[in-house]
Each structure stands twice: as C-alpha cells, then as structure tokens.
Image 1 (cartoon, helix red, strand yellow):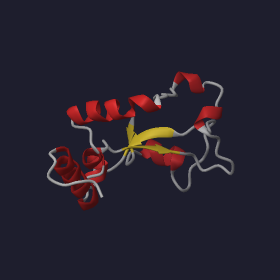
Image 2: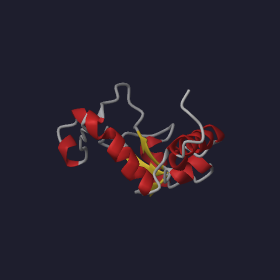
Image 3: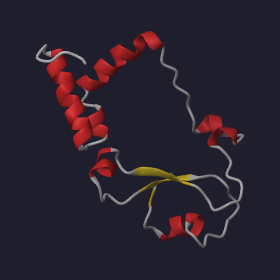
Length: 117
C-alpha cells in the first residue's frame, strides 16, 4: 500500500493523472494529521480521474478483494458488546467531544446512574 504523498499515487490519481490502463481505485495511506485519521489507521480509497467511475463491486474480479459481511439483526447487541470488550467504540473510531460524551452517558446508563431519555 502506498503513502498518499508518493509520486506513484499522484501519477495514477492526481489532478493531472494519465490513466495508465486501469480504472480501478487503490488503497493509500493518508497523512496522519488528525485524531480521526490516526484512530482509523489513515487508509483511504482513491479513484482515477475518469468520466464514469465504476463501482468496486462491478469489476469482474471483485470477489478477489471484496467480501460482504451480513450480520443477523438479533446478533447486533452481542457484537457491539464484543467490540467494546476489544476497545472498539464510537469514540475509538471518531475521537471527538460528541462521541466521548456519548460513551460517558452509555457507561452511566449501564451503571444505573442515569436513565435513558
């Protein structure tokens, strides 16, 4: 995976890119210049400058790099609890005041100190 600042990324996906035989997007690592980017590991998908962008799932070899994950509705709460045990929370992914407040409120509700509104 290339860093977004590498010349090859600009060659394929920059504003003056010359399409070199591919219309597929690529995953790149962005600059680690915000807490959200750092928390989410800074990986982005960049698309070539073409008139009609093709959705990833429409490429004939999509099954080599895409995987659909279906979660049964009755499993959502259990999976949320498991993710929380591993430290994967909204605040971990989106570290801002709104989400830290939500996480604090959730903990207080779980402890019975406040009631859902």
